[in-house]
Length: 456
Image (cartoon, rainbow, N blue to C red; front, side):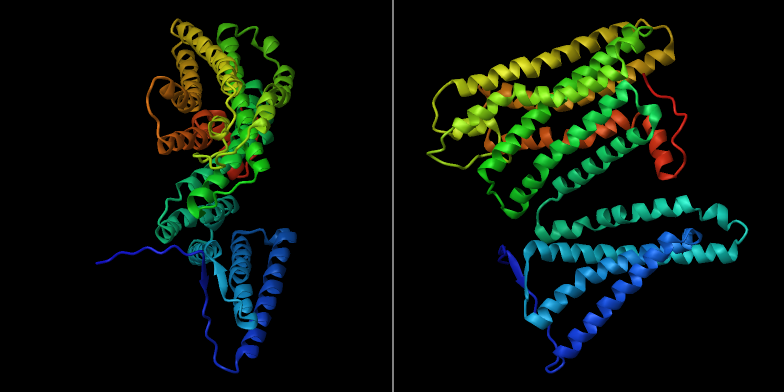
């Protein structure tokens, strides 16, 4: 059997209408869409402004109104464009988005109707227990989880339709959700406004920015063959990534120093690592990074691409740009080596030195609980450090050792090193932490974020 795959960039939608019924069909669609918008918006506003309607059943009704509004907007405007203006072309990406959107909304509606039936069942069969079973917090959590559940459940539709993995998209969504959750929790809980959590929050912000610099363009390249990037955008991506990487190295060093002082000098910790000093360090870091790496910006604008403008990489990488460029001056590679040794390995040395001393002291602590807490915290920190440093060290050391690294393997190392750590950091650093776990629970159950012991 011959298996032929043909790539397409668009589809033609042949929406057949009975001859002579076009105007009537358009009028009916417009009327339905307008009534749908007005009716559902009125329901949403009425439930929103009337606190008496903030009960489980009306929350379900309001959610159903939002879904109906979204569903109509995904379908009817395109139908009108096809029938009234014969605009039958739809891009490949838009077609996938419409398909996936409709499937998800239909799934959410089905589950929502089932939940409303359960709500009425409990209200009628167990009226006295209804307030304790169907709580407002439970309903809000369930509704918040529904879209995520539906997307995960139906992601295979996208995978099968495109014949490509949507791993990067899932990783990016997880990265955004995880890091945003960490930032929100630390922001809302004043008990977590201590030095260590300020560093964790800063790392979450950097991870969020770093992923946004990289993943959307990677997906565009891999999924849609959109390999073109403007010269200015390429330089901005390169410089932004260098800054993010440098800031992460220093934040990791700051965190190691914070733990070093907390374990070695516990009584002096509050006077050495103050909130004011930490905030100043965090605020100065982007400025320091911008100016210390400014030489990269100067050098990269000097490069001449007379042979080719194709970078064999998923990102705008300084090293690859120098390799592709026609300039033969060794200063361009010397800058990379010197900066890597000075700004990459120095913070790593600080981190390793701090944790060697911490482990040495922790093993001497007689209190089993404190010993376990110190070691557990340090292991989490070291996992993040290893995730960050191993991929770039591998890409730097392997070629220097004579090992041939193909473009495919180099790109794989890049994806592993740049995409996965920002997703894993919240899990390793934060969600293993009982203070943040408690804050996340209180955030989703709408309980007051207060009186939670912060780690110092």
